[in-house]
Image 1: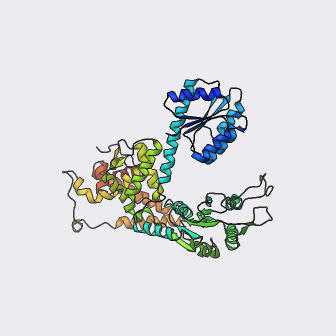
Image 2: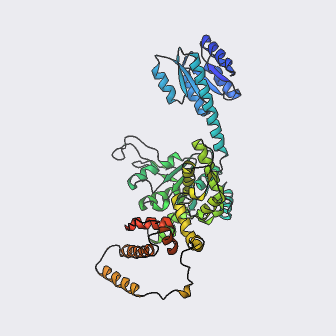
Image 3: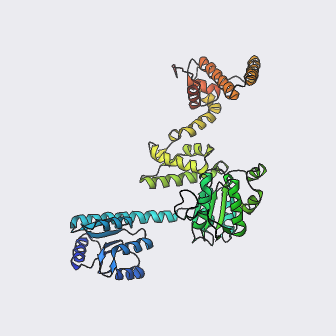
Length: 492
């Protein structure tokens, strides 16, 4: 185990702490000044814990705290101060200290505080190691492997990249991977969602502003381009950028210079731009909502991130990873997915893509009643889809013995056409009258009629009615509520 370092110019304080910690089997090393601590840090690396006085000849403990936290942010630091020195205690907390000891202190409480600080230090070190080992992206599907190869080919390039893909598919992860494996990896990665910022603020957000440029601009502000200097700027949802800002962005990409809002001196930009969108930019260009010259400037290299439904083979891998991740965050044992639950997840389309799967796994970590997750434990949206898909195929297997046999299509009576004619008449009348939401009105009547007929046929049993209609039980229950059909003899 690494030793605990005690820094104090008072020999008696160092002696008392050394003896108390040694009795607990904790190795200790003492220093009388901050200069020797700095030398030891440079030669040997950080200790397990640093305990430092604030006021010492030849150097401040607060200055040492600032330096240590900048170099070793995971290292826990306890500062010692006099009871009357409240300002120093506040400054210590602001500088990132774990806690402080007020002199004179109780030795038992001091040892207890040291034990807590060591425990937190171990936890944070483990979390940092886990974070370092966390893969940037996961995927075994051919489309993802091709994407990984493209990222590798672009690793030494400075070229502008356009990432396309649906919301929640992980476009920012691709951008971060491109940055991490580029020559700019040591520079900042700055992300901005252009659709999430009001139009009036976006220009200042991107390019910064000078003091007094507009009402409320009380100080000069650096924009995202300036913050990303020497690194990568990720512009998410670029398709929603206002046209006037598209012009300014094009100028930056063309000549590498921009102005702060209210500024008169050009600023040279050394930034790699990566853009992303879920929209069809070519269509936006045809509609006049996106500049064609900016599109061609951004579209040097295009990477398409496939939606999750196009790489279903990755769902089990991602689900297990997200369950383990959620368990670590919550401090619980990871949940396990049964084969049936995995099959249900793999069959689900995930309109929210990877983000939806991640949220679902977090939900399961909190809500699933047992360690083994079965299909019945899955969220309602997955269950409803599964029941709806299973109902037609499983109708005969699930039907009770007294149910009427399913007739072949040829044996069914010919359909009555009067209902269609009546609906057509009704539709024309509503359209002539200028009625709103004609589709919704007629659809609701159609659904209500079907459900009423099915429930009458099954004497109010929703399970049987849903089975014969070819929909799931959750679906018929929801429809009954939406349509205001109150059948108190449910499942009689």
